[in-house]
Structures are given as structure tokens and as C-alpha cells.
Length: 289
Image (cartoon, rainbow, N blue to C red; front, side, top):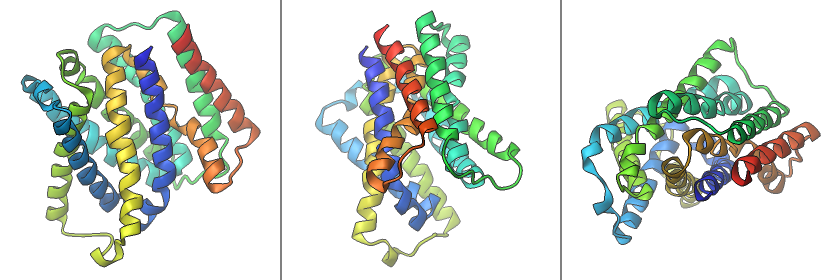
């Protein structure tokens, strides 16, 4: 029960973060935006873990899994997601990447012999159907050129993120706190991204263009996503079926609809509302049945 609620809350955090991140991401560009978020979120999360005394909980015997999660789950997963977004637009990117739920469920079956109960399977299918209906109801397409690269990068992102989360399950089951594990991922990823920035020596925006207001609007959604939502989803993966956690952690495209309505005054269409209701129904079946 707590794992399911944690995954659902993580989806809400990502949805709110996406709404807040839209403007800053356009101004800074994908690389600089991601670099700032990873650096600040990593430092803040690491400090919180230190204050809570959770660093000793990290089982460093699982360092190969940490390295895989950082390099594949965080770095490659985010790069593929950005490329999918660039080529396909937000609607198609969200739709394809939401397929990470069945991908993770399938990997968990072969990796950990996890099988879903009939109610969980039914709820997951209903929730995914609702996500697909809600996302495809958006008014703009945004696809440029062939749809094949969009599918390739979207599925690659979903696969990389799934591997990044699943490979950490043994570490969490050995007693590593989810927030401490999130800090390890963030600090490792921020180091790699910073090194890549030094190698590239190219920046999409000059330092004087990064105003305090823009910096705050960049950092806030990063903290919501990386420091708040990621540890919650890691907790969900540790304490519930991976497929269930993945489905409930994929509700952001639906939860974003009322937030966009409130923030940007864009009322969702009836089809999008129906999809949202379906997704909530599926989530309720998983949590309550």
C-alpha cells in the first residue's frame, strides 16, 4: 500500500515539475538545464542524506549496480528522452516513454521472477490505456520527419530508465535508504555531466543570462523531480511489485492535465478528461483491490 502511494506521489511530483520546467528549459537548452538541475539536486539531496544520517546505510558492495544505474538509467535515459522530445514533441514523447511500465514489468518477470496479480494486471492495463488516451488527446502533434526515430529514442529512454531502477532493487532490499541511493545517482550523474560539459566547452547560454529568477525556476522543478520523486519511486520499487510501481510512476502525463489547466488556463478536452479518469481508475484498482 505504501509503495503504491509512493509511486503515485512521485508521478505528481514529476507532473508539477514538468509544468514549472517548461519555460526555463526553453531558455537554457536541454544540456545546461539538465546540468544545473543535477548539480543542485545532487548537492541538496546529499546534504539531506547526511543530516538524516543515512549515508552509512549505503551498501557499497553493490557499486557495479550504482554505476549501471548512473550511466544507463540517468545519463543515457535522459539523453534519449531529450532526443525523443526534440524529434517528436511533448505529446508523442510522453506517450512512448509511458510504455516504460510494461517494459519494466516484463524485465522484472525475467530478472526477478515477479508476476502480477490479476487485479494488478487489469489495473495496470486500464491505467496505461488512460494515459495513452489522455496524451493522444492533446492538440498538437509536433512530430518532425519519420516516426521511427521517435519510437526508437522513446523506447530506448524507457528501457534505460527501467534498467536504472531495477538494477538497484537488491541494494535497497539490503537496507540502503532510497534517499541515499537517490543521492548516489544524482552526485554520480552530475559529475559525469559536468565532465562532459568541460569536454564539450560549449554552452547554450552565457553566465550573465542566467538571472537569479531563471536559476530558481530551473532548480525548483529539479528538486521536485530528482530529490523528491526519484527517492519515492525507488522506495516503491523496493516495497512493491516492479510492474505496479512502474504503472503508478507513469501517471505524470495524466496528472499534468489539471496542473496545466490551473497554471496556463488550458482546459483539457473531454477525451483527455476521460483518459485521466481511466488512469485514476486503474491506479485505484491497483492500490485498493
